[in-house]
Image 1 (cartoon, rainbow, N blue to C red):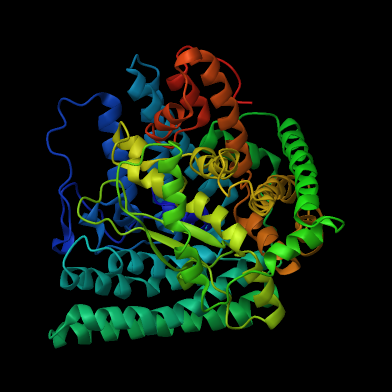
Image 2: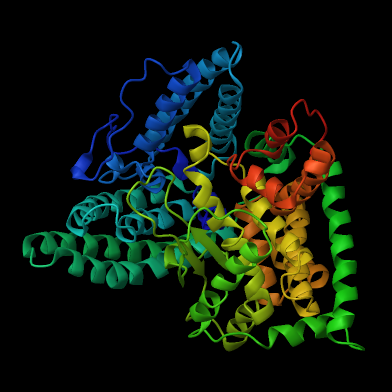
Length: 594
């Protein structure tokens, strides 16, 4: 399962819609990079055939997502973000939704019923974004993040010879400047928060193309001087265009960025319903978030007294934060935590680990630095030849003040780093990736609900400490509770930013500082993330739903219950909405997810 902690995917949500430069056909191995699509489909069910059509069209107009999923016939194609392309995409989705509605009215197998529900949510969520929210009209991040992600996916995984991948890189480099032109045409009066992040991404991407990409291409070309020349022309052109885009965003767009980021209560509720199958009234949902925040905050304060007797909770947290890595040792400090987290799972029989593989630990690429501190980027479920998975940690920006750098690095203190690794690697996102090829259907390999994927990773943090991770050290418990408080604040802030008019600079930022003990600079980053990731309550929403499911599953299984068996059953089903997960694990279940 590929996540980048879902941040880049959410920031580039509209990238899931624009048409590609040309339509790739099933089995079309463009540039010789491709993997053949499925052959005879005559024995497939109508829903399975529909899924094939849907994903073929999805990856034809979003070839970067196709590359990420492991369908490499799309590797020489690049997205078209023009308004006409988005209009065509809306028409395609509307027709597909009508067809799917007719299929869902017919009897089907349990697997087909699940797939149809997932496909319905994906189509409706994309239509919501393109027709009503219209991020493509107001979010420049969509445009400046896509070139770096698209090219990096071709460079960092060895699914084909370097020379073959270099040809695909050149094709995408040549097509990418048109996206920046589309940005100038489409984006009008963006929110200031979107523009500021877009400037960070665009400016960092210039150095990424001139440095990392150029170095990789030189090695990939070898003695092929003609191909290297072609690369340099295309790469220099895109780097120049990205610098021009950075300047345009800085000097032209920023002064006139007065738009609103809030999507409103109706859109907020619909997004949750389509993507997570959560239809709880928003006032009740907010009450759940605020109650859990109060519960975790009380536990945090009580644990802080064990860490630093006689001192305040904030002082106790500060005593943890002072033991943090430098910018230069950040990656090494993250890497040092991976093996220990895995061994704990083995020693305590937490969950089966069907592979000895470990992720590479690297700095978050510049194009993905949109507010996330750590993320996991794993190969797609249909990548058959590559295993490179990347555990990313985000370094401080070179333009930050010394105070901002220090506050950023405090997030990665020794105790917290172990919990972050639990979330991103074991038993979190990396383990989900290890299971991905075993998910029951194509649709469940390719679509996911964040309340499951992020909920599982966040559940893992608390569950591991409850099972003895950290050897009972209250510092580990305090770090886990700080991560829980952070997600609780996201829950409340995201809802209030988008449905109650809460501002970023004052209200939202201060909420993170006061209620969740965040450093001011980090509180601002978190509050700003909520502007483009409105439903980032999915961490806590998912964790709470998984705990309730676990309790109900234990009652259902009785004396046959074991924690390991529950985890094994949960993680092998795919990252499906918890509402559906309950029906699979507890046949006949009709209870609420909360």
